[in-house]
Image (cartoon, rainbow, N blue to C red; front, side, top):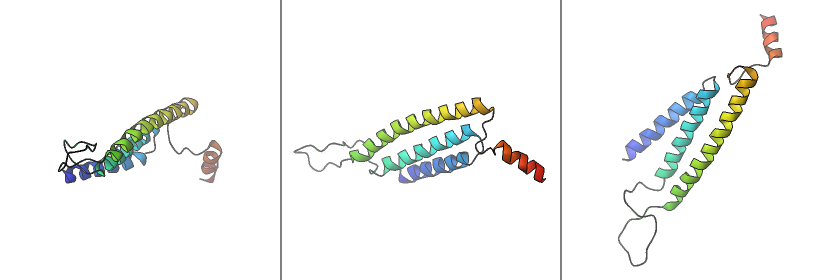
Length: 120
């Protein structure tokens, strides 16, 4: 089970980094989303992988393994924050695309582009 979770985290991280290094805004947004999913799975797995274990301690019950509820709370918080930030980034990217008719991430300013053409 740990190998499967570690492989999923590695694949999500690799795919996210690949998409972040692209030169268009939409793949960058998808890459950041994949990286947040990888971090969420990592946080969730840090609380030990137990199946069917309760997250709350009860009096009088002994010998039962419990799950740590803190990583679950952190993941729920991270999901809400990443959803909100993804919505903000999509709106900023949409505004930049509609304002400039291009979705390239690192466009050179027009003055720099003109200087580069003059230099060649």
